[in-house]
Length: 271
Image (cartoon, rainbow, N blue to C red; front, side, top):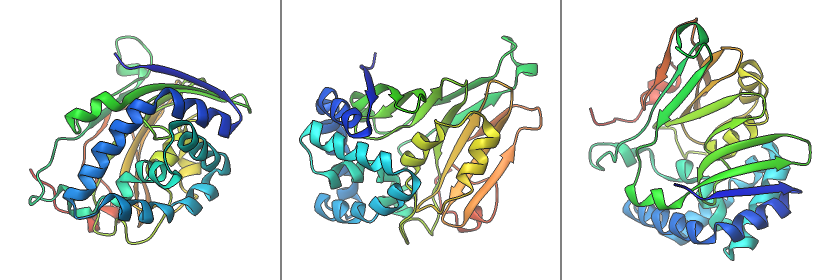
């Protein structure tokens, strides 16, 4: 249903291949987000200017990811700030985007089922992805093999580093967007860059420890699970990281905070 793109090798080379093979889908992503930003009062030029502020946080997270973004821009024939704007779309969209005055387009429900409760006897991790309908045409399956031996498969919007994914260790993750009144106030690690970095983790414990080391420019929930049966909601916001563990039960999340302090600044969402 979605094109499968294989990339490997050095970061800029990976990005060039990705950008070239997904150039049509990247055009669709840019068309979608330039429209969404405009609906929020942010034209595409301003969005690119704001995106440039996320270059440093991405570089601090993983300098190779910044190199890969440069390669995506080169391969697709776009400007690097356009690719940065796609990867920082959650951070650039204003907190009010999902408030009642801007109707909710529908969003995601994610769940993790531990082995003891699953019919397969293994960990189950799943989500639906409800977003702008036209953006389905921009989705790609990106299979990545890096020079350090790490490998993952991610379903993502073209031009973005990652979204929903699974790696060679049996560690997987899903995504729910959240909205906080603090979102966008200052640059921090964009969640789509974090997702790619997390896909190098071996398990939930390592992912939780890694995510705790950074500050974030906007709010999201990362539901992650591993082959050993562990699962956790990692609620990210400019206020920091809050964690909800499964304790042997089915763990699920939608688009509302479950933990403070991020939830204290939650932007109003439709019922």
